[in-house]
Image (cartoon, rainbow, N blue to C red; front, side, top):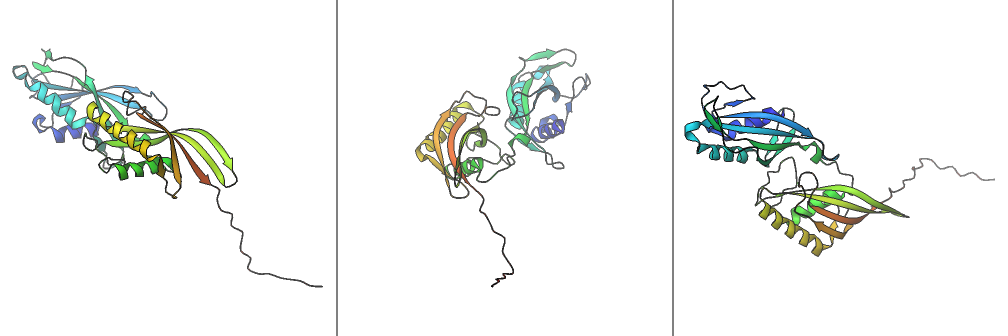
Length: 274
């Protein structure tokens, strides 16, 4: 599924390759150029909540007499995949690709009489982003707050396409630090994580700064039941991995109510006397 989605995206977005995408060693020596070679690398399970990711490499091949075209083809591959959300129209499965860098300098492949350079992407399954809320839900409340305060931000992983102008921000519950039982319900102290997805670092840092300042100024977020979730502390670290760690840490406190007790209604009442 993953390779098929990526292959189709490259074909759709890079017409110059004419649909010519091959697995390793599948291209013929006299194959028409330019074309792409795609290889699958290792899988990673660096943290429990994010699940596995897979590394893939894409190698653009151009005629050795057209070495200047390598740069433009590499750029086209990055534009086609980096931070792109790809959905399987049949199964509904979704993946997100992140460019992680070049794997080599320009190389002369004498066997294929071509110039090539590898670029690498990490591919995430978005199953780990599809949140199932439990009301009152702090992650849903923060997503609603984000949409209200920053209308250009995208909060739904199923439809987002992050850019410098329209970043994506995903909230999740990282830890429940403590629970204080009360006669009416409970106070919950929790830590939330915010994952800010913006392609370029300067724009990402700017959005992070604006978001953190607004959280600090507001001091609270309205939940779906109209109760208040209090913001106790805000931390942000732009160096953290936006896909796996999340750059924003938010300590919050919110309350949950006990379910109302409903007595069974009596259909008949009999009063006896002496």
